[in-house]
Each structure stands twice: as C-alpha cells, then as structure tokens.
Length: 122
Image 1 (cartoon, helix red, strand yellow):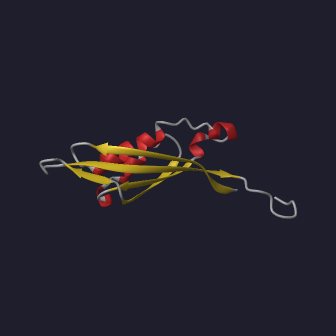
Image 2 (cartoon, helix red, strand yellow):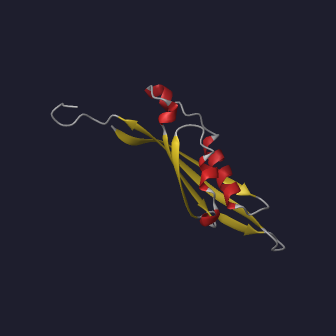
Image 3 (tube, one colour):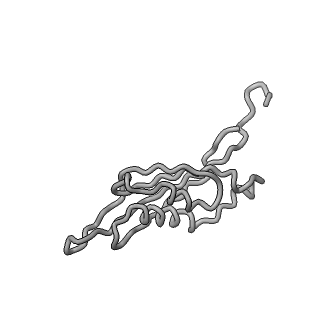
C-alpha cells in the first residue's frame, strides 16, 4: 500500500477590507473545495474519510494564519496545513488598509495498493 495523489484542487480567497490572512486563507480553501465533487473514493470503494489532504496556503504574513481554522474547512478525511509566503496585498487608494489575496492548493491522497513486486508475490 502507498499514498497516491488522486486530486489537486486550487483556489483563491480574499479579505477585501480587513487584510486578515486567516479569513483569506479559509476562503481560498473553500474556493478550492467547493467547486468540485470528488467521486474518486466511491469509484474505488474506499471510505471518504480515508482521504489524507495536504493543504498549502500562500498568503502575505503566513505567521498570522490560524492553521486550525483552515483545517476545519475540510469536510472529510484528515489533513495538514502548510502556510508559505505568497499571495498579494493591494493597498487602498488612501493607504488606510489593504485587500489581501491568498491562494490554496489541496492535494488529496489515498492509500492504494501498488503494483505487485517482481516475481508475482504481493
């Protein structure tokens, strides 16, 4: 058995007025997930909660992101969250605030049997 990446989902999220990295990160992951219907677990006859999801968030000020809030977005399976420097900050015209953009990548892995070793033994 070995983990195999089955799906890569990508999304973008914003905090238009508040410049809050966690809000933008949560919205980015929701964008990535909510535009898809994963039927791969059903097709393979495995439990949907057997998915292992690796979430990567690119956002300005990654140290400010609440990883547990991002992880709570996942509807099934277990996950990990890595937050890296990325995204955009666009200042308002008067300089009093920013619009913050975050990107999300959600990689879905399943533990599936690999090919039989040489010699035909499993």
